[in-house]
Image (cartoon, rainbow, N blue to C red; front, side):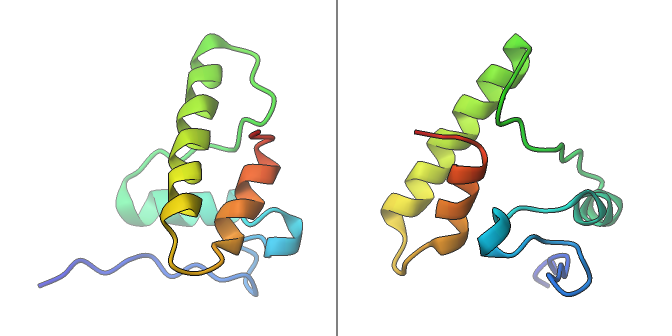
Length: 87
């Protein structure tokens, strides 16, 4: 049986709309972490520690790949790249 994903909604305040950066809010991260046992953390657009710099570089590389390989416009991925200040 396939695993079900967590249902997150813009209307309930769990996701940001594309116009505001298209990421999860603190409420959405908390819901996702509770449901999956994950440890999602807040965005690090201006990292201060070495670990956060690596995390940002990794995120930017992954999202660039998502945008590059998308079949459609990938507006949420592009918005998140802008929110994280990726080049």
